[in-house]
Image 1 (cartoon, rainbow, N blue to C red):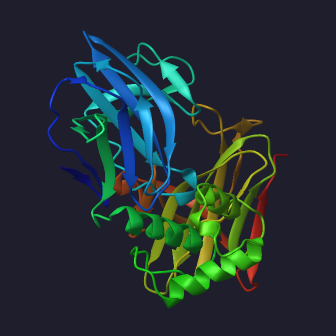
Image 2: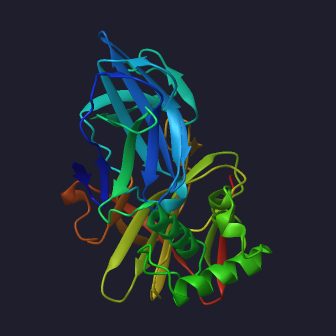
Length: 330
């Protein structure tokens, strides 16, 4: 078992190095994930992604007989969740791309490609002859619990109080879900639909609703971070990816006394866009800690001394029921 933060990949011994049938990934996390696989065979390594998998769902990622020395996996949560629960430090550094990709020589990255950590996996052969690997959290949800916890998590991000995120049904979760369905004009059977997580992700990316909403009115991809002050400590969380023309609700739990926001425009390689030699970003005078990769940081002291970036956040006026921040390029 490989564990990092709240995430683990659960695998059981692989019976043969050659998979006898389809290779399948099953998601028992409370996150919608995107997965990439690596195939290491006879000294060459290829990668392919992204395979989107909803909580409690499975997806075939390689069909038919697969002869390989090793099978490798990299997974990430959708950008709507901000800080990823996934470990990003697999021992094999292979090339990926932001959009769907097939990379034949994945150990030497080219333009538009970046390195990511892949972990060797050893799936189990199931009763149908397929080889299966499970993505799971430390909570060790079963399928039913993973699906409910996934719904709870997206409800919270969309501004509805469905906490705690525990995969346990109850009046609080049902009240939040009923409010969401009513707001969206959906019937009581909608959560049973195969595309319900698509509906929920779309809701998180809509410009309406309670809490804070970011809307990207520029032509660039934007990476954003939220900071919350509960009166005791400030927590920063990022990065949330907001594509051009899209909106997104960052997850804000509880009732923080103050909320802050920072966002910057980036290119396809993740580098900050500059206009007239100045970075294109939206921030302010409140300085908190961030890092280049996804993060959740509770200690805001001595950012530079701890190898972090000191970043200027803008204060968000949350006196109204909902606040929309719009990011536009000059």
